[in-house]
Structures are given as structure tokens and as C-alpha cells.
Amino acid sequence: MDKREYLISLQFEQGWKIDMNSYNSFPIFDNTIVFSANNKIIGKELYIEFENEEIGYILYEILIRRDNFKFNFNEDSRIYNTVSSDLNLDNLLKTLNKKINYNDLNLVGLKVYGGWEIILNRLYKSIQNYVENEFVFLAINNKNIIEVIFDKEIGYLANTGKLKNKKQTDFINFQDVENLKSLNFSDMESLVDFMENYFIKPD
Image (cartoon, rainbow, N blue to C red):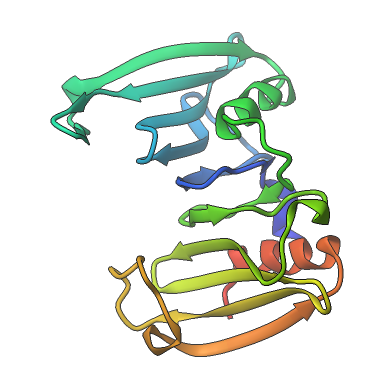
């Protein structure tokens, strides 16, 4: 069974950390979270909860108050908003995607497994957006890391590995990564296929 069938595909802008992504989890019980993500850059959290068979799914948006140049993540600093609800989860996903892709960028949809944080995402649907040797993607999950670089000659270069220090997420270089592996992909479809499988089971 392909676990990707159970994941929601979204156009993730940078900054989103996916906590839960579970599209087809059956049987589903009342008050079950099927998707949740937070973004500490813009101070926002999103989640979808299955309330019950009568109400269906509810999309919530939580805004985090900002105080003295930083977001305050205490419970009393959270502003809860109900965005929309529907008996059919598919009807909420378009609205969810607009919230996730808040600048309406022409990004490729990705099925990202829970636990991954998108540090950088410039994976556009068209290569016209790229310059030579552009750093286009970076994501981290615990100690696992994946980056993508665009090269006009070879296409996409995907590097994967494990961080020696999982708390270090800025200014990463090859000396900070072990078990480094590199793969080339000539087209976006093959790259996305590899990435989505890597999100589920990092080598």
C-alpha cells in the first residue's frame, strides 16, 4: 500500500512545519485531527478536525499574537477562528491550500509526511522561474535533511543526509551532514516522487 494515498497534497510555502497529515484515515472517530501545521514566520497555525458525522470537517486558523519582536505561543495569546466546515473533506482543501500558499506562488504540490519542516521552497511548476544553480528547497525532520538545487544541464540535484546536530538548521554545510547521498532528476515528476517517498521513509 502506498502511504502517499493517505496524505494531502499542498503548495507549502516556506516556514510550515507539518504536525499531522492524514487524509484517508479510517475508521475515523469524533474530534479527530486529520491535518495540522504551524508557521513561526507568519505566526499562524492551521488544522482540520473531524467533528462528527453531522458537522463533518472543520478548518480552524489560529493567529499568534506578537509581542516585543517575537510571537507569544502561550495559550492566552492565541486567537482561534473557524474558517469553514463541510461534510466532505475535499471541499475544504482548496481553502486550506490558499492558507498554506499565502502568497499564491506557482509551487508544485507536495504530500509531506508529519514531522517535516519546510525551511525553503521554490519548487515551481515551471523552470522559467529559475536561474542557474539555484537553491530551491530545504526541509528538515528531526535529524533528516533534504535539499534540492536546480541545474540547467542536469535538472534537479537532490541531496539527503542526517544532521550531526539536529538543533542546527541555519547555515548548514556538508561538514554538518553525515550519510550524504545525491541523486539527479531530469524532470519535476520524478523529483516529487522521490521526495514524497523520502518524507515517509528517509534512508
